[in-house]
Length: 88
Figure (tube, rainbow, N blue to C red):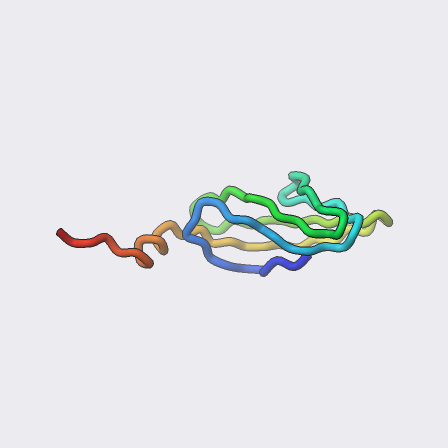
């Protein structure tokens, strides 16, 4: 799979998108993910405040399993810093 290992988000949900091998069965935290015939995937994931650990498991037709862990820091305060409230 081709997803960054760690990143920070100011949103309560993210879209994980990437490419994996053709014919792979993919799950994120044990939830099945649709993979197109050419190996592309795109999945909306809900985040909790703080560090979220997402475990991506790819299983090939030959039953070979590959695990990848993605850590996402959900920091809702980043949105406030990016667009500070206007003073009246």
